[in-house]
Length: 371
Ligand SMILES: CC(C)=CCC[C@@H](C)[C@H]1CC[C@H]2C3=C(CC[C@]12C)[C@@]1(C)CC[C@H](O)C[C@@H]1CC3
Ligand SMILES: C[S@@+](CC[C@H](N)C(=O)[O-])C[C@H]1O[C@@H](n2cnc3c(N)ncnc32)[C@H](O)[C@@H]1O
Image (spheres, rainbow, N blue to C red):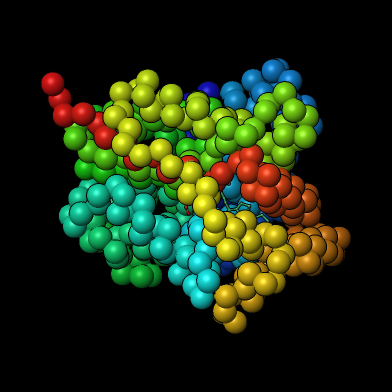
């Protein structure tokens, strides 16, 4: 069910009740500052469909509730993401000698390069998070970016960070559902999406909206989350891994790469690139931080990140949050969020190791000039 004006208003009011007005906090200090009853409600809204079932009816319920479910997911995980990962909520390739932050930035630069983004372009970032990639790409290209996001808390943070970094003349972040955008047809020179459109109930729905708002001749570039051609939905072990990724990452349904590729064709794009960036012989795999393999650490600066993302670090965080919750310092339900995130980590690493899943299926597509 796409966003309605009533849903938009209700989500904005709920976000204010849950997070308050202070978006400068992150991590644990943000967690303990939440309105406790609102946080418990947000956790329940996120987890209500995750009952272990993968039958058609369960999938239908999750797909129908995609907007509220994803909005709730990011209400309860954003502070954990910033604490454990930073302000760019995506994976990247890693190269020896390159720091975690350098890898993240290079991954964003590469997408901007493949999208052909130029100075003064008006660019749409679909599912913009707290604006990490938009800040990097705006600095890298000199373009102007509008970030679209259906999570109020993240939009507030993104606008705050843009002002803090003196990028607010190039960047703005607005509320909206990428399945039903408020933008006019043919509004943007370029569009990109980084690990966001996988939250859509259908690729055709979100890609169709992206096609509509892109100018004729414009380019769309995306890092998409898909199951690879090795994935077999009828294989219980495979389906369990996909379910862990869906549950732990707030995704109503993980689709195969063919579904994304077919959707691009169906809505009218001319696809010039379709490349799984994990299909390589990199010494350090994209899931390295979640694997807990310390041999992958490239620099002292990365030790804190690798600790927080490793199984040991995740267990420590879960233990801390559990104690905070028992002492009444953290809202009820906070520990269950860390358990869901643990499922995400386990499913993502398994999906990566078995080559059943990729978080960086690169598609580059063009909207034809008007005939
Ligand atoms: C949800 C989508 C489409 C993309 C997000 C990709 C990643 C940024 C996240 C996926 C799993 C997340 C986890 C964490 C940070 C962000 C992710 C890697 C934690 C390391 C944050 C700290 C917690 O204690 C453990 C989390 C494990 C999962
Ligand atoms: C994993 S985060 C990636 C954020 C950002 N692209 C980055 O790389 O940091 C996915 C983003 O998609 C947004 N999102 C999910 N469903 C959405 C929807 N229906 N409409 C707009 N944004 C949505 C989430 O709120 C979140 O900001």
